[in-house]
Image (cartoon, rainbow over all chains, first blue to last red; front, side, top):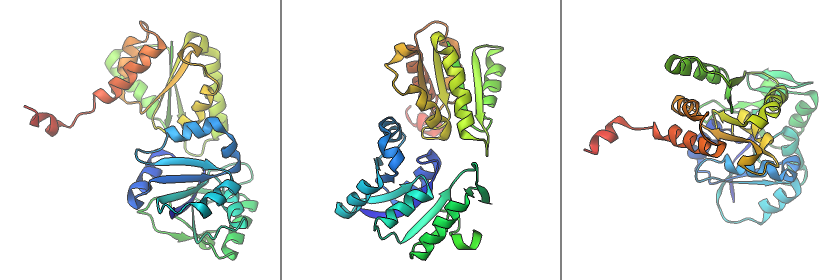
Length: 156
Length: 136
């Protein structure tokens, strides 16, 4: 598969964002890598229901996601989606050579402070993000394809 | 039968208000707007509590957006549900046309029927004026 976008979005596959990215990049598959969600077979079904027309959603654990990324050579345009920074970090730690990561949307929560209007991060998440940068991943923030890409280090 | 309206922001509240303009007063409709920055877990608990306490009367949840947070949170309530007999269902993509038809019919049909009516009414009112004109 061809990863055309790797993104952290806590809200997962909500309509507007995913649909606009899918159209923009000709995405036919969303690979959601998250250990917690992979175990949640009910939510898997709900997420499949939520996919925009013409887009298949697969939810895999970090380990299985990594295997799939290595094995699949279909060339399908795929969005790699994470629910959290931790998810992306774990995959990179497992050895996946992620080049770019869009931290698009993380909501407010206990321990998190506002980075900008759509990003709230805890000290731990900030640390993981900085580590990802240190590992050579170009981490940026971009909500919609029409928004500018902002280097994450500039806003942390 | 209770109708639960869920949306990002006040869309659900205003849908209720607009429906009132057309139908006059009605009861049994609860709107739960999810505001920007609101704690989604708390929101989910609020909705769950309402559905739990009214499930015996039948609950039809209408949400604004398939895949949106209000939808995903309420879908949890359907986990393990057997079918329409369990007393609840969700229809996504609510619009005013859908809400009006649901309100007009909710006293006189089953949950399953009402869901079918909701889907048909939601879609049925969507027409392209120029396209319709071409058909003559």
